[in-house]
Amino acid sequence: EGALAVGGTIKKAASAAMDWQKGMAEINVTAGLSQQELEKLSTTMLNIGAKNVAPLEEVPGAFNKIISAGLNADQALSALDPTLKAAKAGFVDIETVAKAGVNVMNASGRDITAVYDILFGTLQKGAANMGEIAAYLPKVVPVANNAGIKLEQTAGAFAFLTAQGQGAAEAATLLNGAFNSLS
Image (cartoon, rainbow, N blue to C red; front, side, top):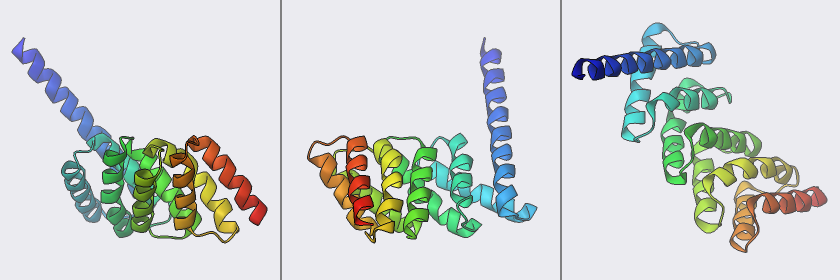
């Protein structure tokens, strides 16, 4: 019975290691690093993931989402820690937060650290959870940006509307309508 448990644990660990290596290979398609650079990146990502108590199997996918936004490996690495913290604080999966951060960053032209600060502010001031913010705010930001409205104002309006009882979807619809009218 004990031997079966140990065997199952070893099999699970080997599978996780294979998944991690596959994730790193996918990252390197975009990053184009040498083997030594990729190993260093892998170790750093493991340390960041462990420090944030993140499900380690999700870390390469989040990093890949970040680096695929046009960041270099160092920029994506600096974005990984706030992404994992945002996921933990917002009780939502890492890839959802990474996607929201990257989409808002691309739409607004702001760096990822500033974007996460604004997303956390939206979470604190509004009545939407991080999953709702991740789903709806990235859809509003490009329209607001076209109307000349800054990210802070857009996020603030979203937070205000949700704090006043609007659902996240309704707040996004209202803001999109208002910003479309302004453009």
